[in-house]
Image (cartoon, rainbow, N blue to C red; front, side, top):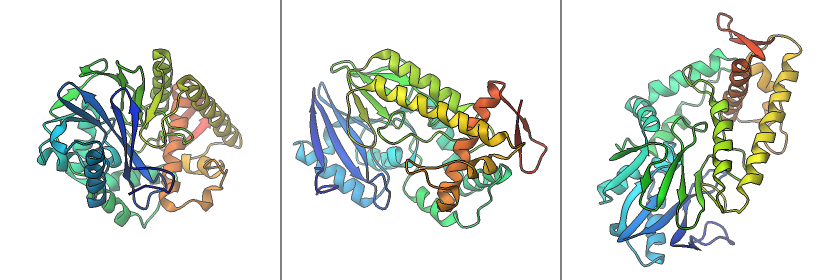
Length: 331
């Protein structure tokens, strides 16, 4: 049951690590990787896909291809709370997986979101509107996303440096407040979740007023994982690759280039994040903002906000919260 003609469902990566590609039907990312890590007496599963019958079937098929069943999986470790990484966790725990680990900040965040998902979505939409982009037609898409996840309480709230079997946690905030990477002490490789992808640039956005300097956190986390010196990268999307330091340099350079583009857009005078986003090229193809779907326009504004807030923290721009919409001005 391949994802694509050239990709099998499972790949043995050596050192007791197995990659299971879990489908993301209708999403351009195509699949999310669930990684099985062999431990003494059982397995750890890193990320588990979203809640859907085809994902559960793919996971069972992947386990069977390895000669094991879900009963052999001792725990799930979640790199972050986004539904394509965490959504199936509740289903798997009801089926007998005993342990679920995630960072406490992501647990706190997802608890708030899923306790009242419609209210949370409305709050995010209003925040983006306050920053210069109002859209009207996304509610059904947002509700569909929530159908693909559920609130599953972790049995262990993880912190930076915790040891879980052969893995060591690395707290890497940015893509989410409690994003975690995991270093494998046996192989020296790092499971990077959505913190480091190749060639995709991970989304770092500000969707809520309380999010702070997400991009500053992300860039610091990039430097943090580069200093660890992992022997290889096992990302949540796409295929494993070897050169962690090269990819970190590329991502830092991308954000520096984006900063320069944001600053250039502000030279015309005070602008909202929405107006700055409209002045920037988007995607690797350099598409105009108007070519993006409404949902992707929201993502674009959230990413632009992350750059503007980081520039504000660094003293490059100021913000007028009393303006409608909120505007930023070069110092």
